[in-house]
Image 1: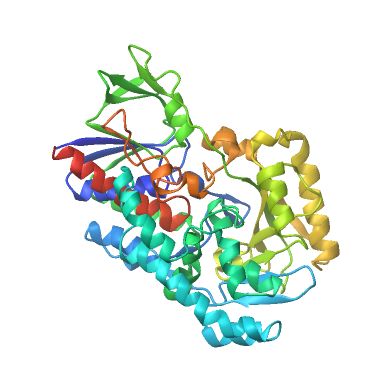
Image 2: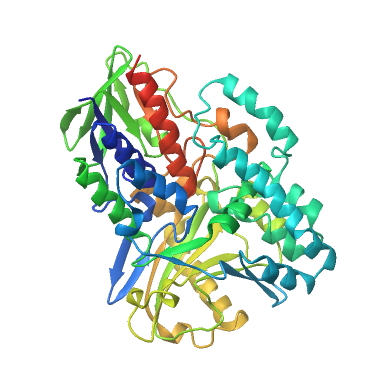
Length: 490
């Protein structure tokens, strides 16, 4: 039986662990923190339950494929609830759109702002579908781009689909109203991408959501982590928590194993679901040849998170609500390029207790707020800023957004800053998304799923192809599994 060690226990690691166990590998997963899940951990306080990372499920068929690989059924482990609308988008002029998978609802809402845009809705969705077909149905997302030949084969098709142009530019060809241009270009932000720079291949998310829906899993996203862990254990996998990997040991150009808690564990292969920069920093060999190996490139933004337990319910908040500044491109530029902390902000608000009463005490709501901010390269002192910044967000929600009495009704509050992503999650520069998914850091130009220099060292998760987001990291597991199979049969 071949042996594999996986560093980290995010969705990419758990997906790959299940896949390898189903192929009769013996897999050990090592997690730094007390609980598995990587960015998808969860905590509870006085009846309030908070997911700390991903908050929605798209493309459930990708998750189903992993369970099917293990001979299991997803519905036997978690209960998925469809969300309708997917989210509500509030604009600076107090207008809003309920973003939905229902064609008629979308067109009717868009007609209020621009008749031409409404007429182009289905044309845009068809364009999104073409890109989705290439990435998902034809398997480009689950195919590793470890050699230039694969990339060269993809480029003509990408050019034909206009998939290499910036996402916002392509969306603007279909829509004139600022609301619609935002609504059909913002999805790259979910994976750490600047909509004005990332290739429009990520516009496929519009069709992905329309075709597969947007879902919530009862008990929060951590219930999906628990489901993956349960299947992994049922297949014979071993999971070690409170077990940070301090070294990947290399001899004669091959990985020998890892060191965790001062103990050596050997394996035929090692896969890192950890941050790529962190992974390279713990490579150790007798001749020190990997001492200066590093990751170069432009890193993505970070996020400032707030967790609120509130003793009052607010009707303007749906399960998923996006509240937008009057600025779009300028704000994104401040975050990604100028790397400053501007006075205005846009935010994503997740209120799972709107759907699942178990997530908060009766009559209360658990609220998760995510505000995109610059990564730690900006030099912002978050220990000094976080309470002040949080107060600014609360003031805006209460005085400008209309959540009357919010501050007086807060039963619990906590923060998670870019500094916490660095310390608790080992995320380089405090960004959970790794390198920004611009064209020159996508596919072949992103960290490969298999190391070029160390053939039995592999990568999975947001830092490698195809990138961040729940579907992305699960597809990366499939891509990496294919490479492992190829390597193990040589």
